Image (cartoon, rainbow, N blue to C red; front, top):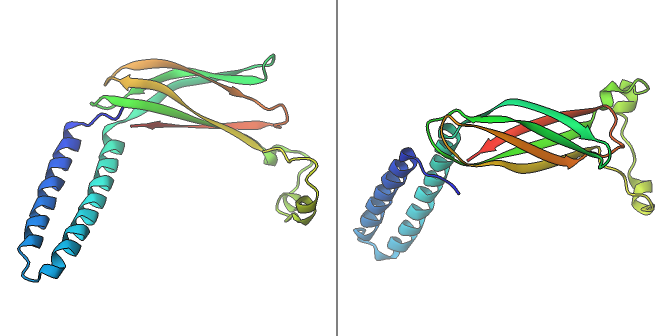
Length: 180
């Protein structure tokens, strides 16, 4: 659920009044052929401004931070578990926070890999005709909701489990938190 702060409500009221003024001015137009195009363009422009304003307000009023995160592999199930704590740093309630985790092979750590082999373009023509074996992706990613209805100042623990392919070599892990 998306929670509207007082700033969201003020922005909605402001843009509602602006839209109402534009519509009234459109109907006061002497040339009646221009009334509906002006109403349509007013709704379109004010709607776009409203959308981007609410998006910006959402980004700057709903802040959360990962305080700690650690991971361990479960070899039996070929998975990896991320555990940690997240804190609502803002003054407003957050509807939900999602954690996006990406695990990728680190090709630059390979000892047999040189710069020329790293950036040498590979032809895809043989792969087009030979589809016996699918190539394995060099990364896996997962997005999971870790917190819902997050109150200001609270700290919540979280846990996310995801598959960990055994073919990844020297993986590096990147994660990002999205809250709205």
